[in-house]
Image: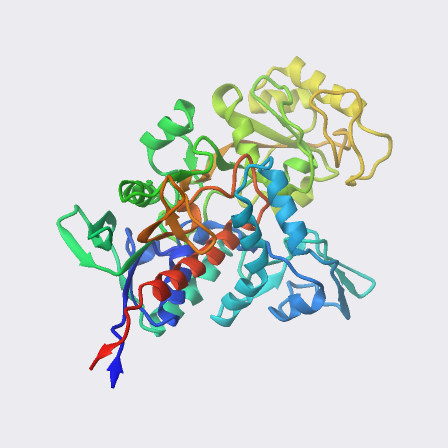
Length: 498
């Protein structure tokens, strides 16, 4: 008779990535110790502060209804029409948005495993729903869904992301994952050329392990690393997510032999309301992203436009608006709308941000503190460049103006005018640990570091200049799940006599 010793896997970070890794490793037969730098109120990492959007491949309505039958109010319909969003389309979009720099194997893996992973999350108790903000709408009793970005977690606004964390944490605890709160990863330990455990806290305590999965997020919460890699103007940027992602896990993995990957000088940064405080717990709402920019114009404090507000669907472009704002004087801007779109912006894209309202453009300029003549000229020039007609539709682009507004260009000429003050809100960084598609951390020669795995925002190689909305949570779940499973199966000792 023989028995097999259960391997011990240490997972660092209790966000979506870490919880996915811990559950996956436990289901693969490992003892799992999940370390969280913060307390229980910090569980969830950046995913807890997200909009809960998942981008995944699907072939049609049957794939979607295999995940959920939940609909937001007013969206229930007799049938669903959903053109396919294929693996090839997903991969092509991600490659295009990285300007061809993304690691092809990681891109293909993310696209291929995305649908199965959303189903896996649903099987753990995560509830999804069809979301109107992303373009789904009911017409003549039919729910029409545009390709991609169709499902979010149930919940409200930017608190939706916590609704993927809550059931996954409960499931992890139910199946026996050991969670140690207020226990940060300090060092990855080695013995005889392989990972042997971790040092935690100030480094004075150690835990033995057969493998370690680093799921500690990016380095966006480190002022020093932001200055070093993003630039000095990013030192005081507002954080949209967890204050605990200071790059500790990334640095520990690099010291353990892993290679760097991705673009360390790039990040996800959206436009946010500057009056909203950074969240203090994972159940709190983050500074609300001002995603309505595509329905109006963005001007800097000199009263000038500086970016194409409508290069495509907002969910494909919101993550670079913060970077555009950071290049402006004072690192601030104003989103301006008229009565064509102001009500929709307030309802869907502004959260609790308080608008600045004025009956005339000169009055608006005075209230937001920009040069009156410049703002009057900027909006007049923009209005003249818009195509004729009163509608606000995707096929309307400006003519003979720089910067152009490629889509949804309608003149701002229906007072009262509305403005929202906007600054950059840093969500996560793009540089991190080099991995293969199964979550193995790779050294500079591309060889796996024995016993070391990584996933989520702690890794690089997938996102560069920009990425499609919903791909970040999908990356966390796909590669977290893969890293946990790989760690458990590769470190399972051979049977020995009882």
